[in-house]
Every structure is written in C-alpha cells, then in structure tokens.
Length: 265
Image (cartoon, rainbow, N blue to C red; front, top):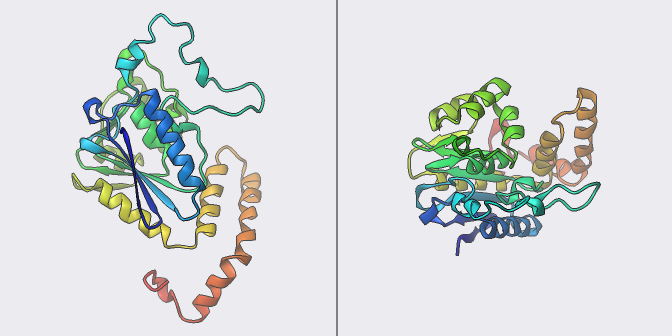
C-alpha cells in the first residue's frame, strides 16, 4: 500500500509510502492520492488535511523508471490532456495538482520535495519544512518539464525573478532559503514536520469552518483579478455572517476571545 490514510478527529493525514523510490509518484499512486483527497473534501467531519512522505522523503518527483517505459510511445500523456471546452479535467501527472478543494491541505516536508514533488508541495495551501529538507527543479537534468503547476504557482509565491532562477538552474533550494523567500511558511527541526503540520491543522480546524473556507476561497480566487473584481468576489463571503459571524459576535459580547485571546473559543 503506497498510501495510508489516518484520521484524528477533524484532521486527515495522508502518508505516502513508496520509500524504496523516495516516494516518487507513479500513475497508480497519483490516482490513489487524488481519489483519497476528493473523499476527504466530501467528508463533512474532516476539516484539514496533512500530506507527508514516510521514510524521510516528501516526494522525489514523477517516477522516472516508469517514465522510461513510455519511450517510443506517441503522446504518452494524452489521457491527461485538458479537454476542449468545459469537459471534466483529468488529474495531473502527480495526482491532485489540478484539484480545487474546498478545504486546506498542509504539506509536511522532510528530505526532498523536488521536480514534481515540489509541484505537489506548491499545490498545498501551506508548507512546513524540516531544516534539512529541500526543493528544486531536479527534472531540469532530464528534459522533463514542469507540468503540474510549477511554472504557475512558484512565481505567484516567490516572484518571477526568483522563480526563474530556481526553474532555469534546477539548483537545490535548502529549507532556510525556502523559508526566507516565502516558498514555505514554517521551518521546524528535523523529524518534526508531520507533528508540526498536524498541530497547525488542529489550530485551523478549531475555528468556524464556513468562514475560514470562505476567506481561503477568496484568496485563491483573487489571483489575476483586478482590485474591484477581487473585492466583488470577496463580498460573496458576507453571506456566511448570518450563519457564523453573528453567533461569533454574540460570543464576544458574552466575554469570550477578548484582547486577542484565542484560547477560550
């Protein structure tokens, strides 16, 4: 079994375990992870997901040993093509990289998150990296392009110049640099990425979920919009006030959460 799904209250942790391949992604693993994440998104009892790789590696990218078997085939990735018009979009080569989930996913990164593995981490909402973890476009060496969102999401996170430096050189990007340039949000000691990511997930899961998801959705949707259109999109979140916001305001009026206290919600 290359994918283990563990639940702890409202937190789902997905453990990828192909440690013999440093958790490289083959089609069967990509399909399994995509279906598991869709099931998580549909489950009303689950609020936040964590993605972690067993054996000290987040993901070393697409399985090049499998890719080598495609040599000589005409259009070997044709089944993953984007459809003409409004047809159903197939999964990405790395699995869930084309999904637009309604709930947050946190990458817990130990060891390599390189090539497609970096793209998988970029797809997540947040990244928690261990001190010796690293990213990089290691597929630069083999003529394998970034086709799981790397050329889209990386410049949006770190800016075009930094993204091009990372993409064109294929160099190793250590965790400290990732943290410094905004490629990860939390830096933790070695061996602590899963625990820290799950603690962060529990912190997020205890808030009113409708409001949290509305704000998250607005952040994702504002990409590429002009300010007025982005503000109009954000205003759609006002509808959640009558379901959660008014009740929350009443709790504050009753004495909870004063002076920025998050502990007695």
